[in-house]
Figure (tube, rainbow, N blue to C red):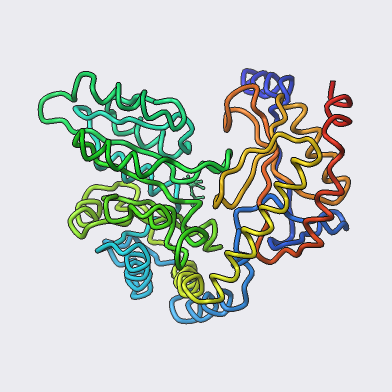
Length: 393
Ligand SMILES: *Cc1c(COP(=O)(O)O)cnc(C)c1O
C-alpha cells in the first residue's frame, strides 16, 4: 500500500491535500474550535438548512415513517411524501413529472447513463459539474467538450459527423457554473438543440430555489423553460436539504423509472429529507421566498463591489448566487483561505481538479440570513489585493 501513501504525498507537495473538519452546525455563522466564524462557504443560499419549519416537517416525517425506507422505491421504499415532493417539483418547473434520486450526483449519473448509449453523442460544456461528466462517461456515448459557453465551437461540433446509425445527440450543461458564478447561454443552446435535433439536458443545481420568479430556476429566469425537455435539480443547495431530481415530460420520467440504475438500485430517499424538501419548495414560492432571494442577491452585489474596489479579480454574473475571487496557484488559494479564517471568515478554497490548473480561487456565497454588517466584516477581513499579491509571491 506504499503507492497510496506516495500518491497522497505527491498531492501534498502540490498544495492539493484535502482535509475533513467537523463543523458543529451549518448556518450563517459556525463555531469551530471555540471561535465564531462567518460562513461564506456553503450552498445554503436561502438559509433554509436550519429553518425551524423544515426541521418540524422532518420531525413529523420521522415520527410517521421512521428513519429509513428499508428498500428501493420500486420495491417497498416508496412513501406518499416522495410522490408529493415529485409533484411539487414538477409544478415548480411547470413540467409534467419528476423523479427524486438520493442525491444530485446520483441523478446526473443515473439520467445520462440511462438516456445515452454507445451509439450516441454527448456535447458538454468544459466546466460542467463532475457528476455530469461521470454520467456521460458511464453511458459510453462519444463525449466531446466545447469550451466554456463557446457556442461557435459547439455549433462546429454539431455540424460535424453525426452519431452512428440509430444514435442520438445530447447537449449537456450546468445552468449556473458554481465555481465561476456564470450562466449558461440557455437561449442560444435551446436554438442549437432544436436545429440539430439534440436533447438538451440542463442541470440547474444552483438556480433552483434562488433564481427566477418563485425560485423556479435559471430556465424560467431566461424565459426558455418550456423548450428544455429535461432539467436536473438538487435539493441540497438553495432548498437546504439533500437529494436530487430529474424533471421533464411524463414519458421521459417514466423511462427513467425503468432505466436509471442510480434510482432503481438505491434505497429510496429518506422520508425525513423528502418532507423537509417539500416544505422548502413551499417556502421558496411565497413572498417570503422572494424577499430572501432579493436579500441574497443584494449581499452578493455588495460583496462583489467591495472586493473589486479592493483590487480583486471577481468572477460573477447576476443573478448567480455565488462569486469567485481568482487567486492562481492552489497554495495561494489555501493561504488566502487560511488567512481569512484567522480573521473569522470561512470561505471555500477551490483547487484543481475542481477548476482548471492556474485558476485556483476563493468561492464566496452569502446567505439570505446574513446581514450587511456580515458583508462589511467579510470585506474588512480581506487584505488589499496588491498587499496580498506581494505577500503570496
Ligand atoms: C452540487 C451539484 C450537483 C450534486 O448535487 P448533490 O445533491 O450535492 O449530490 C450536481 N450538479 C451540480 C451542477 C452541482 O453543483
